[in-house]
Length: 327
Ligand SMILES: C[S@@+](CC[C@H](N)C(=O)[O-])C[C@H]1O[C@@H](n2cnc3c(N)ncnc32)[C@H](O)[C@@H]1O
Image: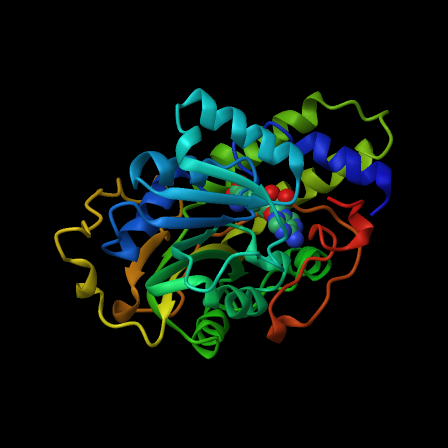
């Protein structure tokens, strides 16, 4: 990615509510699937972006959040939002790479990674973050994946250049191979792609100056991603995986007086026009349901590292790679 495109790409994305598909309802649903947590769970939010999930976890789960990202402007956005909501004392904001997190083993009760693990590769992320979990800890990660074995050619072509996807079965198997037990899965409803991500992004694209260096290409990339989603969203989806190390005891260990079960009721999936979104405890069906989709920050260009078997690793957007101007 050229410097001009890099700058334009981030100019287009700054100020969005979030930097990938998601919603507060989905964050709450994933929390419910995590089961009872300590009263003030030590929480690591990896690739926090502007921090929508960090804010909810601090405000509603009483979490002591360490929010990590490499892109300073996103961290600044989170700092401002936390201050505005009186949550600054509950959210520690640190600039680190997700590939080299400087925390001791067992430091966190909860690790939260919405739309970010793919940047270093799902499998590598799961393996390298596992040591950070305290006994009984939970990792929540959302990942884009195919919902069909035969995607439309346009969707297949888009994802071939934007990041190889694999099936839910493959992701579940990868999580288990990395030493986790799947506590639950939740498919993000189609509204999660649009209401707080694609719709605001489309408005930014409409308002952007195409004469600015790199901007025409950045706008075209965003519009193509949104158009593919509108046309072929049933072929791919975002799913949240709620995982715990496989050697974790059953979670009754949390139900001592000092460990309050997570009581918040999720409002249920927000409207899904296809009626396919939903979540299940793993025992009730860890395999993929049919369904809607998922999305994320992306521009067309560049190759990806690793094949689908290795999990995706998006070198264009992972700030560890020099092509991204130290982002
Ligand atoms: C698709 S966005 C998702 C952001 C946020 N979780 C959300 O849902 O709004 C991915 C995030 O990962 C961050 N990122 C990219 N490479 C990173 C790295 N090596 N270490 C930490 N964060 C990184 C980006 O700056 C961006 O904020």
